[in-house]
Amino acid sequence: MTPRPSAGSRTSPVPETSAALDHLRGSDPVLADLMKRFGHPEEVLRRRGPRPADAYGALVRSIVGQQLSTRAARTIFERLTDLFDGGAPAPRALLEANPEELRGAGLSRAKVAYLRDLAERVEDGDLQLERLPELPDQEVFEQLTAVKGLGPWTVDMFLIFHLGRRDVLPVGDLGIRRAAQLAYGLEELPTPAELERIAEPWRPWRSLACLYLWRSLDNAPA
Image (cartoon, rainbow, N blue to C red; front, side, top):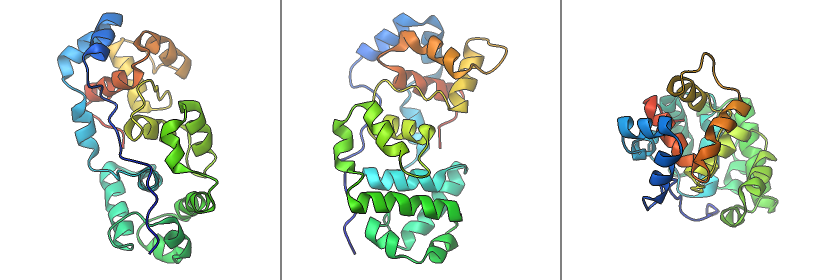
């Protein structure tokens, strides 16, 4: 079997120093209150459960888990990996697999097509995953959203939880918007533009702030 491509180990969006925490506490009293009340955001990372450490595996896992509960996504991903010796299928192996066998693991036709598109781009060299850690956020975003099935929300999650980018604000995440609505006493869910305005003082640590918002809902993004 062709070895799975690697793009390095997954990193954490939680900074190693107190500078980010001090910045967030000092820049926004509402966020400072959340930080005091709900504890360290590592809990959010723990609740997400184990994830593939390589970029390709992480993207496969993301496609499999779209629009599913955390439990259902984990179950189907495990069924898929069971077909490939316990790991995320290498691009060539996935392209050579019978689509109906993949569907038998619980994947929809659309998700099979998405996985094949990802595999084709990696196999052909159109998507060079090993270069992603070197690229700025916008270039990563542009390259990944060119893959069928990888939309803005999925790429934001990849930037935060796989590449460990520090200043990502997933304006399309309903959990973040709901947490902001509750924390700031808003009558309705904030629009993406309103969320951008609220989050402006958090720069350059918006990813960390989002972990606290997810933590305040006792809810981690799937």
